[in-house]
View 1 (cartoon, rainbow over the protein chains, first blue to last red):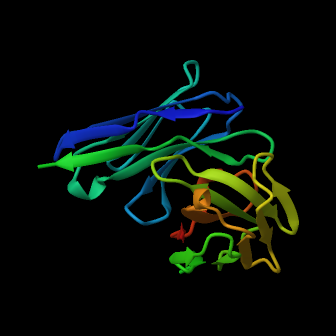
View 2: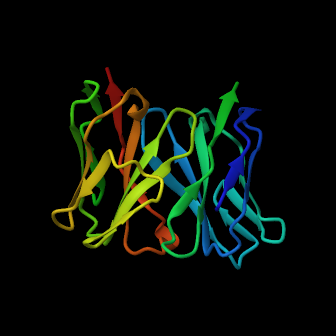
Length: 111
Length: 115
């Protein structure tokens, strides 16, 4: 079945860039998403990329998609302490287009 | 603001005692989903409703049921909660099954504790 994998933990210094990586298996995905989850809260949509795009930039966020390698990344420029959270990559598979999530990358931002 | 609201935020139930979690939406979305999220794990889809059509995931235990009496509300019923059912339960909605540029809109979740 479909699978989405992410590294579990990333630690960066405040002001540096963060890069969170994700790989997926379903090549029929139309959209791929990045969600953010703060402690005790639900998931908040950060950004998405359409499958025919290679890159999307949205203020401090840059999403890169390599369809050949089925690799998605999220770059956060000038990372702030408020960016500390868990980031989930999600793949919209074919059929019902249900979202398949990775296990999430916990981003810790330190001074 | 249009949103997805889950009640309660925290629920404690006894082992084996039926419990119902509630989700409501003001977005008038056609599709409503229930996800289970255990600690440090990916949210796992339990089932979804497309309008009134119920769609169960193949590996969702029979212990979990759902009801959608109208467009706005969806309920998750756990008939006999076990310790392994302790988790965060997330409700989500989407306008249609494609998700599209809006993806899914999630509620804040209900954290279920089984004692």
